[in-house]
Image (tube, rainbow, N blue to C red; front, top):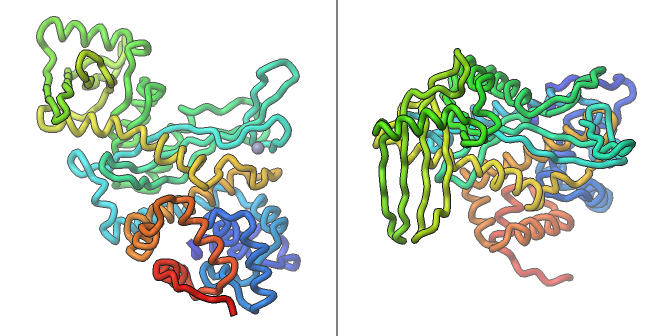
Length: 418
Ligand SMILES: [Zn+2]
């Protein structure tokens, strides 16, 4: 990551630089990593008192910028400049053989796709804000992103790709939308990872012909939610097949006595258009006693049989991980993604989002592969307590690096004040 920060071209004039771009971006990242908006001022204080600080030792920051400097410089960096870090992390996981545990359905990777809003205001805005006018003269500004993450039904950790802003481009008034951002995202993922075998999973908004065409064009498979309300013709075909006895099914009764019914049918048209794609359809429901407790239906290009139907349903259901284990974590589990760290007049809002997502990504990698991190985290029952402990320890004690801090907290020495 440090290398990527160092490669970014500095938009500032050479003679007027107090802190190099690496130090500025790394300071912003450190703030997100420790989820501590005051980290810069605390570490400056340590520097003044002890002639050293933890931003230097843990994050290799040469000189700590003031918060306002950090905001101003970060505001001027085009967000796209930060995009290279995400594929670099994924390649590193691949090389370290940590990625293979995410493979399913013949070695493919399941990528969940969804949009989310991370900023909304009627006062603060920038030229990239989306605008809505809920009542006349009352404009609401907001920022949304389209996020893609690698998920696995059996893993709590998710691995994010670079987020695609749903935003207005310079000089146009046309409002961007989620499915357009979706098409841009899959093209960018394919460009960054030409050989990665991918299955895209997403909600009903995406199970439409133009998006399915885009997936095929990018050589990606799909498992997309298809609801009866949006796919009238498709469901008529399924009904007809069912009446003719052309559907297959699998029934399972689990240990709790719940009844799971899987049904599928191959080669049905996605819609009523002449050149509609032929897709495979599957649906699933859980019945507990008399009550249906879950029901959903999907379309896919993957051939369905008795051996893969259960995994297909698990993969389709793993889509919720982008809502729960990604957006919910970012919004409600300490990352304060909706908290206004500063909006800026160019790229700040989106750059802070990306730095926050990078911090989340590094935490996911540490949870997945790092024993020091895992055993230290294991000492605390709540995530909040864990990070509180890291933050307050970092404010008053100097450490050589992150592992020094983690091991110190794990061993929790009892110290009397002198
Ligand atoms: Zn804005």
